[in-house]
Amino acid sequence: MLNQLTISELTARLAKREVSSREAVQSCLDRIARVDGEIHAFISHNDADALAQADAADQLFSRGDSAGRPLLGVPVAVKDVLAVKNQPLNCGSKILGRFVSPYDATVVEKLKAAGAIVFGRLNMDEFAMGSSTENSAFGVTRNPWDTTRIPGGSSGGSAAAVAADEVMAALGSDTGGSIRQPAALCGCVGLKPTYGRVSRYGLVAFASSLDQIGPFTKDVRDAATMLGVIGGHDPRDSTSVPQPLPDYAAALTGSSPDGPILKGLKLGLPKEYLIGGLDAEVKAAVDAAVKKFQELGAEIIEISLPHTDYAVATYYIIATAEASANLARFDGIRYGARVEGADPVELYGRTRGAGFGTEVKRRIILGTYVLSSGYHDAYYLRAQKVRTLIRNDFLKAFKTVDAVVTPTSPTAAFKIGEKSDDPLQMYLSDIFTISCNLAGICGISLPCGFMKNPKLPIGLQLLGKPFGEETLLQAAHAYERGTNWHREKPPL
Image (cartoon, rainbow, N blue to C red):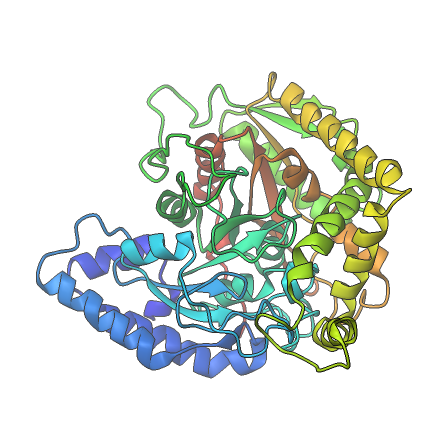
């Protein structure tokens, strides 16, 4: 079935005119109709618009006008935190009401320019605050491998849609692991680029110094292709870095004439990540992956990232502080839902009280507290200093190694509702992914095995130097070519 193809497989067949874009889109829509009632990856999708885009792509193919459009005719869905002109933009929340975006995010502009069929709003934790996609105002998304379990978060809809073959690729956002963790739990590839590599213009902000947009794909080559499309400098985003954009897909040579494919690559194994809470089967799968890297020619070096223990606390001070400031704009005055009050203060309180969910309120309160008079220096300022120490740990390690290898998540997907009443345990689900965002570096998660009973995906994380995505993708691609984990399909 066409919906099961990777981007590279589909584009090859489209270029040869063996299939049409309409057929590919219809295959995805048929799959959504069959399984999304069970998965609930999508909040909404416009079938007629998707098919109209596909017809336009087919006309370009028929005219021989496909050059410079690497995603021509490929269906791609987006997380409900990215602006797509004339589509709803809710961020998984009630507070935005019936708001429709008046413009495209930069990444969406780039997808469209590359020929992608951009359709569908994917479910997420409200305002990207969560690790399980249980916090959405639009209902819970379920893991395609076991629908009694969470898909991860906050980009759970994006991961579930790709893993369930509802779409060829998707975009998500990663503030503390929200691409990599759901990719690991759903058994697909998730890439978090370096902060500044991909424009955030048109991304509704959660924590502005941590947020980064990235792709979910079925294999590493597709991730390289997607990053090559959405990456690059954007003057509309003041944090976008004017750094040259490599041809990531072309760099995936796949062979080496001088011996093992990863000969000369040094991978760091941080001792702080092999913690007591790490599931035994996850550890065994990661250990096996490390051995595979050695077989491929990589040198494994034990390293230390000594401030790792402070990452979760540091993150939940900085992220909540920035969230409390960013979410102040949702007040019921200018746009979105409104609950009337006798005066502006009552209107604000009623609107925000009714519009925001429990987790968002919790984080706004935490963030407001750590920024308040008398606590700013004790919490926020100190967290920023520790953040610098965490970044310096990585920069020091990268003087010795080319990338760092870790588990993505300490466990496989847990049951829906299992951690809902224990926010601390939920926050600890991101223990291996948070440091990447604090340090502003790049990271990727890819499948490296399965739990035995029940069969659930396990993710391997590679962390790279700032703007070191090329090396990261080469290492991930070499590992993927030597294994078959990414070819497994959930039993839907």
